[in-house]
Length: 140
Image (cartoon, rainbow, N blue to C red; front, side):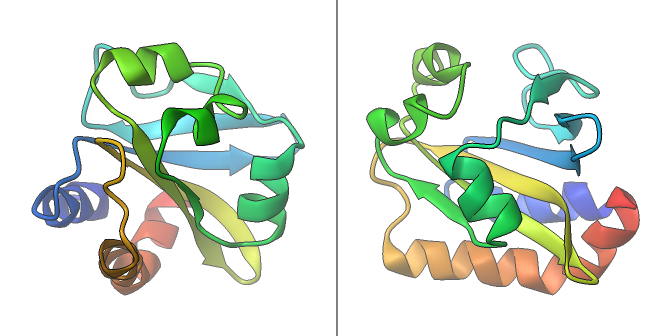
């Protein structure tokens, strides 16, 4: 079992419905998917452009968790927002994996609208923090 599998299982127990892990390749301007719970809709090794927008400023440059509890909150940043909504998902968090002061990637967790209460957000962030050394090793 990889660090990704283990974290996915722990997050699923909290109600996660879609789970992916992506690397951040700033030189290429891409996010690359390394793990997915939905291989048909979000295949491993899929890429998406990494725009230098508010999401980037908050999550990559700011090294902070992005939280959107409704589709309008994430639609302005995610070109695939219609697909996300079509899967019955309405909220997401993107938790940066930081190693040596650099964001190596993000853990992307999606669920129904309103899912990420302060208590659940704390629980998810604690799971990612506990897994950070193993995640960083997989993302390097």
